[in-house]
Length: 287
Image (tube, rainbow, N blue to C red; front, top):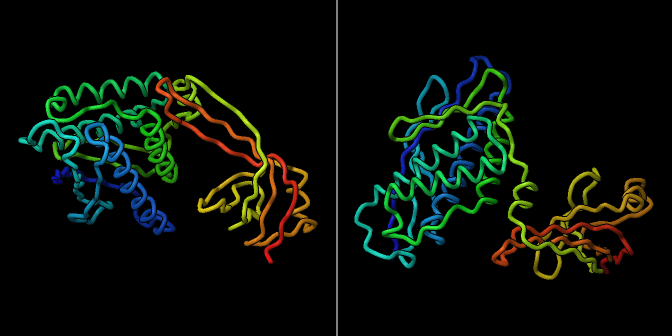
């Protein structure tokens, strides 16, 4: 059996009138709504691993761009210990934790120590709401939390100096986000979590879905039934590809030497997996 819990909040985008390229504002506004939903999802997983979140638009106001929203959390009761008598405790936890996380960004924090302190603060909120009495509470996944906060930072980077985003919860507590929000170094977070790390090289065949014609991003491949995005670091081959000496099209395959890096935490959980193509050994044309 599943239950739903709602959490109301408001997002406001302040901007100068007669701003050029207004579509940029709407794209940024849409992105921050999605970013907040992802943050809520990370927080909700602390109390239920199978939780899902949906955001609904309740109202929109003139003046600045203001959206009144409500977040619906679908709770799978398989992870419950007792009957859920007070759903407002869940709402309180999500709202207070969201505010604490956005406050982290508002205060321009970004260190691993600050991130761990944020995790402790979120756990304290859960204790205040007595969530351990009803759910198998677990501290937020630090890496997922960092990535969700960075998503918000990347969105706010698109604001100009005269613009800001304000997120307000149902208790009228609000946080302001501008375009100078610091980003968390994900590699630093991975290092702090890593107990064991392994590297290896192997030779594989990747079928090309989409080449990277600019040469500075990732190629899209198929490997069996898996879709992959992988960067090619073989500079000599890339130079030939850019100059039209090596010609490939979608459907062709590359025989490549790959380098893989795996990082595990102290519980043996894979926290990071990175793959790069370090050498292109051949091209297999699609026939």
